Length: 355
Ligand code: ADE
Ligand code: ZN
Image (cartoon, rainbow, N blue to C red; front, side, top):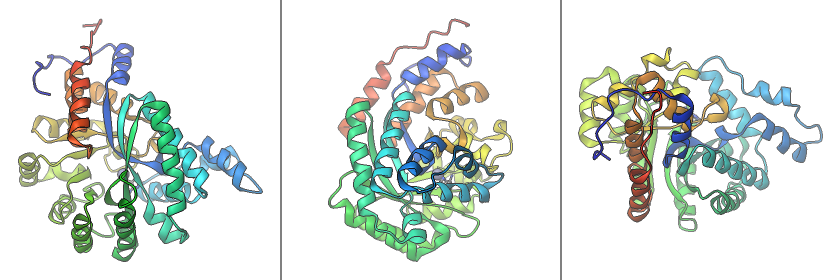
């Protein structure tokens, strides 16, 4: 992705750039299935499931939060409204329609198996069967591929994470769409260290390892995620404060799943201009852009690319490079990566009429 010269100024023609960005093939590597569910969808699921269905007002109120803790509670409240295999089929299919609209060719999607197990104590397999039906229909209808990452909730502790990761290992034998594990939740309550042995076990089982790291805590949270073997880091917002860590991230080219709008909306980054994404990119880190929970943040992946252009001066050619990074950092087989990288390279240049 380094063959083209970078144009000297940020792209300025907003509507034309938006269209160009939506057409640019790219991968989304940090997306929570439950965080793609719109309030209207919760209402429609509730009409099917509940004697007294949720009103739109009541659904919308679930999405309100004022800080990171409130955001996690909102995420949990939405997840608790997802009940049946049909619900999971419908939200997966709807997610893929949204991905198509943002120009996403491939997505690696977190599913909060930890919430299902810990709060609801229900069997995951039937829900997963619904997800798989949605995935296959979505792949057929929208031409988007999806791989699954089973996410544990770190503040539920290692015992819950063990159930989630072992379930991933067990089910991976039957479903090649399951490719990895991760931990989300509240880093202020626990770092990555307690999960060390479980990460080693998951790796042994052939799963890839990701972790939310340095979202609400300092660089120590990122160091500990790297130390337990995380191959990809979600957010890594606080790496900026530690030059030695930046050196390691650059040297090892550990992919960063950067989520700009998410960090601003949850209050982890106070002002968008303060976000380190451009600093990371300029220092040679392996940056990818992602939307995290688009229904909670009012964004999608195309919007994240446009934000990068508008606020941080990324040029269209930079955005092409970020799209290339997203494919390189994905867990796709090499042949499919090459195919997508070629499509990104062959995608037409952006003609900025305002320049
Ligand atoms: N679950 C869903 N989104 C999350 C985030 N950004 N951080 C931690 N846990 C999450
Ligand atoms: Zn996340």
